[in-house]
Image (cartoon, one colour):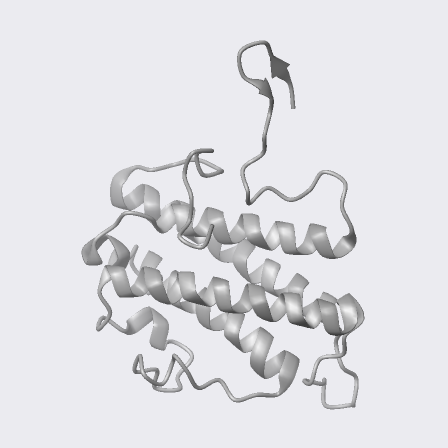
Length: 194
């Protein structure tokens, strides 16, 4: 965070978490950074690039985009609110299996990117509503079978863990596709939702 006479103070990219924010701002900021990093890792590919796999794994960049889009919906509808996960997944051909997103080849590149980008927008709004409703202490619908319910805080931490794990996978997959490496998106790159 330095300054120089030609450019002025450093302005962080919009996905950078705050330096000194609230707990909710840090959690949502970290989620925003992970979303942007994963999206950048998968950005600009055609269907072949999005479907590229490193055997014996079934993971692909397109599958990771679909998986994380569905994970966001699952955490923030089914787990948080107790609502059934239906759309857009039913219309996309989800067959109810845990591996559908890694084996489907019916979606083109533009549609795969749109599914992910729309899930980010949809779930950012869901998080904002939940935070306004009860903050990070909002009780989730799901329980552990003994009547213990996680709070929104726990769901966001779990979602961050899901992104973190799969962003590491995306690093390897993207490098295998075309050699792209790097930790963060370039500061001039923007995901569709920003």
